[in-house]
Length: 168
Image (cartoon, rainbow, N blue to C red; front, side):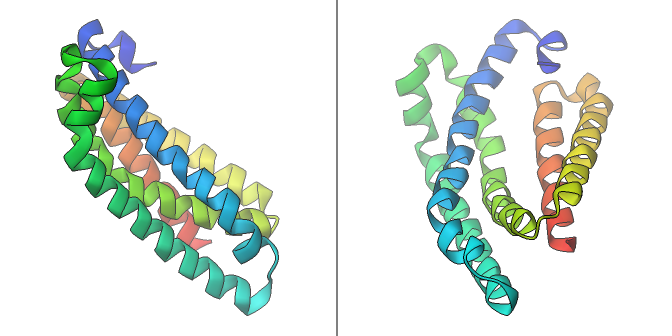
């Protein structure tokens, strides 16, 4: 929403369409984890928990990468089918955004591990730090980058989130 105040309304509409498609894809990570995490993370402990988490993180990253690659190539068809020809410029925006998906999938797995270990404070602190970092990236970059400032802040936030998850 901060972007809406700083770029042309037409550009914001295009960005919103692209970001909406991205959010739909990233939500798949939560759906996949809802099925796999109870068996692979929440019912085990100790060394098995670590092994399962690493395996699942690799699988989720790989699924995210494959999904991002497929959607990169199908994005024109998909966006035009859903939003119409007036949103053709959203395709380029989406293609810039799409490769954050593997990190989102990866981080959601490590989040499940953090939650399993009852580290609520770390989880809370991680997302506060990510929020502040993303905000700083956005504020620093919006004037010269337009809609890309939103993308940079999202990318930077998930790179930081994934890094903090791995450090956990």
